[in-house]
Length: 373
Image (cartoon, rainbow, N blue to C red):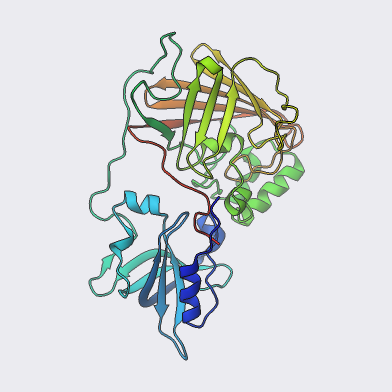
């Protein structure tokens, strides 16, 4: 994890005679900004901070006795680049008008819902700059190994990864509740419907939702997205199958490019003596097997230092999951997870969603808290 200080940002703040601007780690939009409080600012661009997880435009806003430095947060470089923007799209010294939402902590930060160059009334760093790059799609039958077994990854000589999950948070199958891509419920009154939680777990889940997931250890401290959460992340993942070694790697694109190992040699789900310093693990001890065309993964021995879904559903170290991966065609993976945690839930329950194959591309390069204080 790269934890370098953003010296340019701090230096610019000191020149203007104000405190250094706080640039937090990853977060949900509502966790950092109050979406009920709008603000419009006009000023001059002093710096573009082009780094993950979010780019920032530093602007000098006129005032008395001294001007004020504000940080305008926009999407991250990966999203901006995909939409046709670059670091040079907004020149230093340009006059801009920003409409957005103020930071909850009262700091001089604003979410750039609209960023416009006042000289031309041209928007920048919002929407798309010209024609956006079309999203790659994959069609065709399920690729297979010579044995006839489905391939979890690309065909020989090809590249690609799994992304664009159809669900942003865990919800029991058959339950209809609305939530956003971060796992935040549209209506917190729906919390009890999401999964069969024990009273303490429901109370904790409601508290995490009420605080807009502000205390998420993955977003604040770059903890790994353990268990089914790794299949809810925006930058996707890859399977690397090694039949000769009887193991499958799951390589994450987000976080700090974590990897998970699924063994297919039938070994017991126990830690390696003297080998696993962090046993129990964020990803647990996983063993996999094939059931027809479905890859079934049984995982136990988790720690409780992570959130196992985006929306903050609690779990304990008793968590046991059974995942079923079924590649129905070249472009679609059906993912089903059965959750068994007698420490947090009243019974077993199941959640299912689809993942989409992105052909011809490698996973995006993203490090959690890159260049962040």
